[in-house]
Image (cartoon, rainbow, N blue to C red; front, side, top):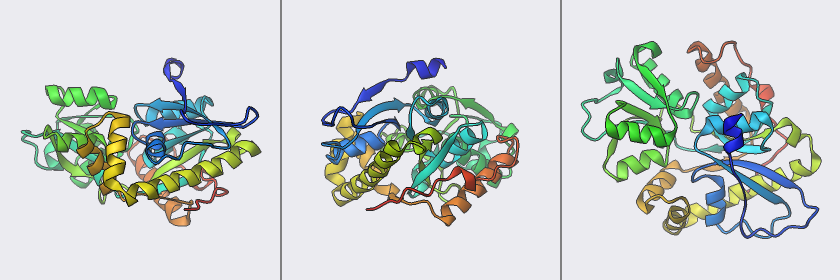
Length: 309
């Protein structure tokens, strides 16, 4: 609960709304939904009010969802499963499909490690149950290495970045824009990327209480469509968008451009393929012992929200 008391909800600037308008409490991660909507100029004259809460990673965001401190949040496929298996009363309502190349295991530029097989006996920093954790486990499995043959250190992205730079860990399993920052700053290099290891799916997940509230559900439908529009606008002007987003999130423009351009992301409605992909991810987590019991994922999706681009 301490983490939940520390999260900060910020009223989105430039929004005008009627006093009686519904409020959506939205959980975000750095450089994600709010930044994209602001950079695309879509946070104006909305028919609903937004209260933002920004989190450094998926784990504390999932805690906020589970506690009902927020209504909806952006979260990767693996951490969403981890949260649901722990009892979170949430459902995925839309999916952002992307190329997972930016989810990767990063090492220092002068590291002697050359492939996943070299990770045996080494230390890997990541967030427990994060998409970085998932990619690390998949890469190890493909190399024939068991999870207990490496040393996982569960850290926030900021702490992991410092630990890698200081040599306190040998590798960092992370995601963009942190991967892109390491690459463009020449401080790190990618040992293994997420292609072929993870789906690249990120979800907008909403609490059951929000979905059962007619006004919030209608606002959520509008919000999903705004996300899709923002992404389309961004890809229509990647240079301009990247420069604006870089100022908002405080990252170098070249890192932001690399991160966003290679994702090739697009929001879409939940479909049967996405559910099947999520089931495969859940099965892998259960095989790895991170989920105690088999999990059927279909009931964890809500298909009443349709993405209109």
